[in-house]
Image 1 (cartoon, helix red, strand yellow):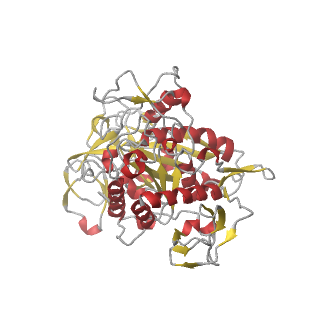
Image 2 (cartoon, one colour; image 1 turned 90 degrees about the horizontal axis):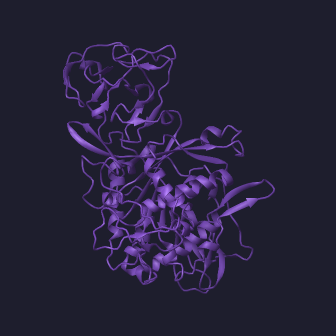
Image 3 (tube, helix red, strand yellow; image 1 turned 90 degrees about the vertical axis):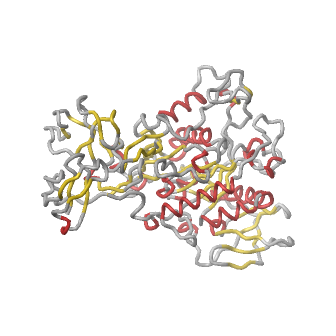
Length: 547
């Protein structure tokens, strides 16, 4: 049976033997007796022939049937919601509709906006109409997550329509106001020669979180960025049955780095719980926060600093939260792609033998007149960067590949240049510290969009091709384990081990200055592997508070 609280309308389900019991609503604490009700009495329209459509709230990550959405009242007298807060418009389950089919609130006004039945926060209607993909961006404080996220989205908005036949647009501009402001500062600034700086992402506050009341606790939830990814008429697959699969809501979060530090996740600040529902993670690794990598960095760069952070500890904290929130055991591997974005690569490029700016990761097929990601180039760059990381921070590579089945190392630069010391002081920065800013006219990002392009490719949304080097040689000495291939390059007395996403690909051996073909088992099909699996079966249905 299904019934609703007579005070706030929160929906519950229970066995029929609960009829006659006195219960307290978990949301508003109102006490009432459970009585047998018809669907209409419980606040539901008739849905005899209407199938259930389950969606995930982008705020609280609870699953609910789209038939259970609440509407947000419009009349100014209907202020005060037991969950959304005293200043919020009341949420309600409609019982009356206008001639246009719109829900009508208690004061007779038509209502257009809907809310999650659990957290009562506004959700765009488009979230209920098409599938959503959540991607989590994780990194230490001051690692440049906000800058990378802003540059990544700016580059994607320009590239996707021109190269891949997609548009990336705001579902609701009120959700993306922070990112839109950041884009204006960096890429549409009226004074492009004056250094600017993005504000630090805060742990909480009106610009970064929403506060609700749940089970008599004030709970902070991060504000999501929500975008619509839609195929254009020029998309080669848009006219086929696959078109529906190409439509997607892309949901991103910009958490403060402190949220990922051990001990910062609490019952009243669930800022990183989106990791449980994430379809992929982008971990931002800052070389300027690792003492061992600093010797490879340009010490004259104004970002260079003597203090460091334990990014491995932060990574382990992230993995433990994923396992805890998702119900994964320590033996289970994360079934989604993990992209390690080596940030601020402009300070490393002189010491690393990776000419990243000259590596074009897009292939154009003149016969089909189509673009695709060059997975061969991206994999080769990932291999070279992985080799560097194995020399400098081998424990981080091991931790990443022990957590996820699919790991790529991608060098990125949000600016392509160094920031400058600003004359004006940034709010929130103490007067004793140098305030750094970037000159908008000098911004030349490279590969900043590749982490998200790879996530879209691995989820089957973008085409990928592989360039083949004509002089690539086979590897003769190798053996396979369940998850990796162990081999040696000819004449190189060193054991190499690579996970499955490198099988069958071509990589460059720096000792021999030669490309080699990584072996793959005869039954291994790259097309089947290079598509992320669903996390649905890994999720714990009792995650957080389930009504």
